[in-house]
Amino acid sequence: MKIAAGVLLIIAAIINVVAGFRYAVEGAGGERASRWVAAVAALDSATAPDDKSKKEEMEKAMGYLSDRLNRKYLGFFLLAMFVLQLVGGIKCFVKKGAMFILIVGVLSLVAEIADIYVINFGIWNITGLTAGVLAISAAMAIKKGAGGAAFSVR
Image 1 (tube, one colour):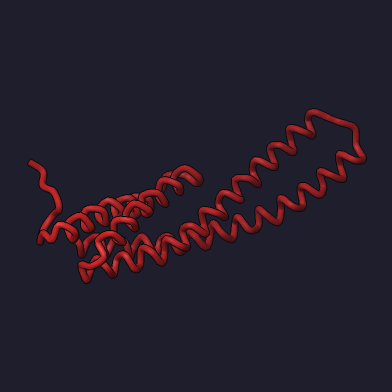
Image 2 (image 1 turned 60 degrees about the horizontal axis):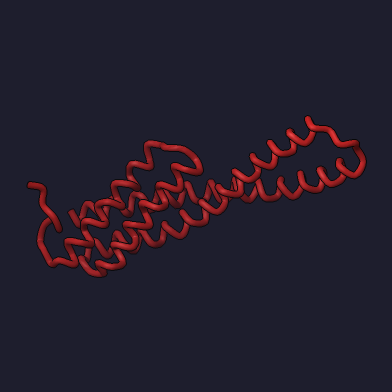
């Protein structure tokens, strides 16, 4: 189980680095666009009379840009998770660092839940969720010093 946790953590790390770069780039574009939209809105409000349809349109645009900024922060978090999951996977192979593996397992679950919340649920989220659960179980097994699972189902 510890080997499986290590393999899945490394696979999840590879998936997270690809997704992290994508989300960070999309979010950076959204940040630049939000500055542009804010500047245009300031010019428009100074020169045009108050109009409810324009206000609703601007709120919709700012909501879209807020979503892009959330993707940027999620992307940076996933890039940090890449390193942690890679090291956690290696520690699963050498069967040392139970507390570190436990923390990586919990953070992997947090990263996947955040990805589901900000983006949507995808098939690749299953890998990260499974890796997180297996990492927690492997950490418990390493801490216990058992050769097999940390807990049994009866």
